[in-house]
Length: 244
Length: 45
Image 1 (cartoon, helix red, strand yellow):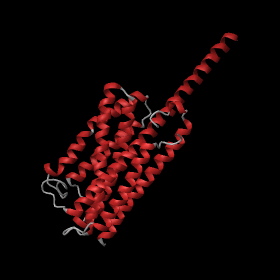
Image 2 (cartoon, each protein chain N blue to C red; image 1 turned 180 degrees about the horizontal axis):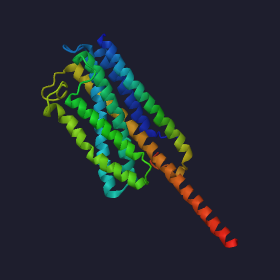
Image 3 (spheres, rainbow over the protein chains, first blue to last red; image 1 turned 60 degrees about the vertical axis):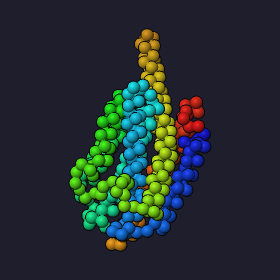
Image 4 (cartoon, each protein chain N blue to C red; image 1 turned 135 degrees about the vertical axis):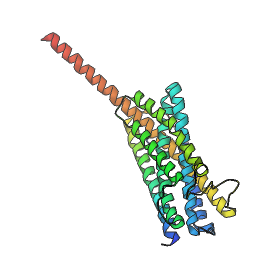
């Protein structure tokens, strides 16, 4: 095996690709424009699925961090980090597509609305989490600090989720729920897009986790090599001292 | 601006962004597998 691919990732990858192609067809061609928002409603079919991937990613980071602090398993530490990176990438997409969607619907790209502000804070906090994972610290200290942030940061997700209910703002309420305005083809297009993006997220997570595992192996090998070189030098110096 | 301009811009940014990230992950994975001995490539099967 000379890549991070496997039979399972081939299956999930192809399923994600087919689902994404179908979701594009439904989102951009088959689904109708919405009565008030017109064709701009089509941005919903990437805006909501990208936040779904972020939520799942941050949820995995939280679970991975809790388990890591209990049993110090490298598997959960690396899984938490991989999931957070994917979460951050997709939160960036949420903020960008939200801003683009804001212009035709609200007349502005940005507003300090509670949902937008909370999402931005969440994005910055998880960027901080990723920064901790890249700090020049001993591996164990780095992982422990990241795990603590991974647990604390989940509060952001709850704030983002309920911000539209707790505070009044420009952002619409829940897209899916008892007061859902979408129906028929629009609801199906949204459902298909969410499934497609979640499949893509799962595929990405497996690959990113495997890359993180390999990075850890390379880091351990380099450390072992440096230690053995240092011991060799020290041994040589002692021997040299004894001879002279 | 037409609504379609916003829609296409949004889709292009997201899909190009995903494509770049996917390419980075796959290329990095491939180069790292060559650096790591086979017995340490756990989780790759």
